[in-house]
Image (cartoon, rainbow over all chains, first blue to last red; front, side, top):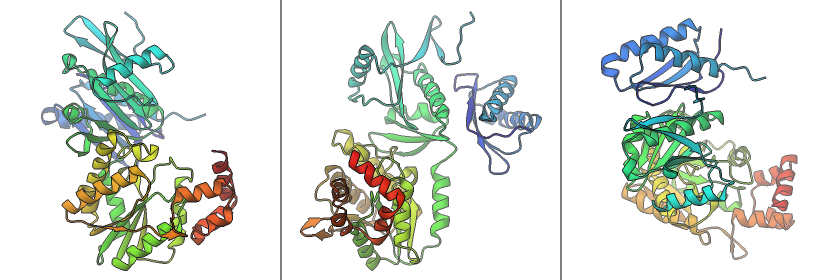
Length: 91
Length: 356
């Protein structure tokens, strides 16, 4: 199981992209979403992120999302990239 | 086609030009001259921040932004290029830097006309005045901070006063100010400035004050956090320089205190030590008094305690320590500071003061 042990970011705030930031959690998933299409797709975005976290076995993380209209697979890719970056073991 | 774009953020202008943000090389006098010239258009002096990004078009800077620690600042774009996302590109590059440095939160210090851009980038406003706006992003924010402080301070019980101190190190002057304040209030909150830019490290400064008031439950000593005289709210405080930015910073810091902190913590009175010497502190006191009184928060300026006709100050104590006049310095210090200076850590700091 991967553990988020440092702050990480993936993506950007360009149009059609999504900025994902993660930091170590307080014993649960704490998700904050801001999106230009929140009214239309907020629930879908939330579900995509939570599903991806579950797939990756992440249960303890703070996530801040700033979405600029990213498509489903972009969101998944950014969340996964952020997990990789945030769960690096310092040697 | 396969350019490495990991470090480069791009955007399209019209449909033909692609812009990149570049890391400005501060060792190159030509580039330094270039950024100085660009910032001078906006009336800003370049003070060699940790990192600066620029976007160029036809070899001319058209937009820039910088970072010092976790403070992002100097966001400017030529007006002919506004609305094309240049500031967003710079922000992305700087964010990369801030996270690489291990910060989990950051501040944006900019002009109010950039407010809409940064709000759309997901940043929250801490406070704005007519001339500046302070925003924050990341995993630490004002509401979390103030909630923790509130929990620690507890339910208000009578008249509540505040003192903000740096205590570099704590002197009998500070002790006198605190004791005078305690005569007038039921509860006293002492904020110790948390920014670690003083010769005595924050933990030391804080612990000395805590020790000095051990057992007195009317006194609550709190870490100042990023919202009270920090590099975010008041950078010139630490460089002790009187320039045109001073008024802007003092107004910002004082306004955050008056409109947010004092309101959330139900503060009735703030105590200040009179300032006979330092121009920065003098300007700050003046601005604080005006802004707080406007919000019906009492401000009491307590005259500095004197010893042999000289006002006691931490800088004077440091001077005595530097000149090896330890006995003279001790006359101006409370017991907790003396105890610390006699410890191994304390000796090391005295040695450090002597070499500076």
